[in-house]
Length: 290
Image (cartoon, rainbow, N blue to C red; front, top):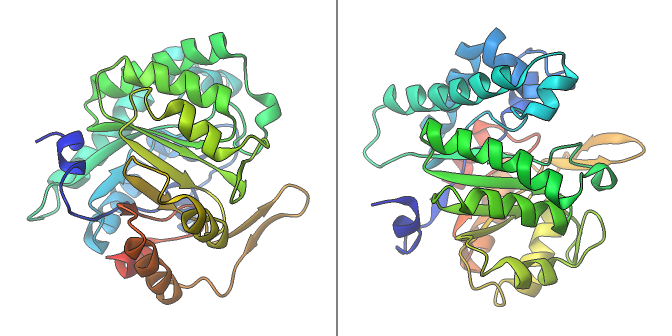
């Protein structure tokens, strides 16, 4: 059974939590431009340990640490296209090693992460469609060749780049999930309308529609307004705080693992298929979802 077939079952699933902020919490350097990708060469054992902790917490899906393993980012760090490719393959291997090192009665799926090519919170920096298509096509092929179960296009901040990434991912023949970051319940970060993005991409070959990397209240409002209009399986994974473009990150002290358990239960009741965690959450949050 592949991931698309598994999605058609009635089973709810738990996605893992973040890699980047969890590496930072464990004392690993996540400075830009490589962010979490630097740890693939410098601290691979920590990456594998984080994957295992998420699986032990109850995650049915772990996400490869490939959020920033694209050629564009590696060149900013003075590295090469081949370095980016090797890092992508190594990151998927670390995820697979984690799955193989944990005794688990159910299958653990590996999602291959594809991120925006530039800063997630700067949609104005996004390249044109043709450029984005070429660069996402390269990354999607690497992930497919590395053996992920499906491709997770995440934290997309504008429709144009999301469409290019979807086209590139669908070409691999793997199942594809698409996740947007919202500024409010109605709008993608760049101001585009989320329901229009869904309507234009729902038949483009994606099997899973998602919202991530924003505050849980925005996601709750989105679910309340749109869950009945979303015909694809729905996945959500919120931040444990807010990211303000001016003042930076602000943790939400009221968003604890225990409070998230209650929020996630309501989301499942509204028909959400998969729930996980994004920036600032941890294995403790994933355990509470489970």
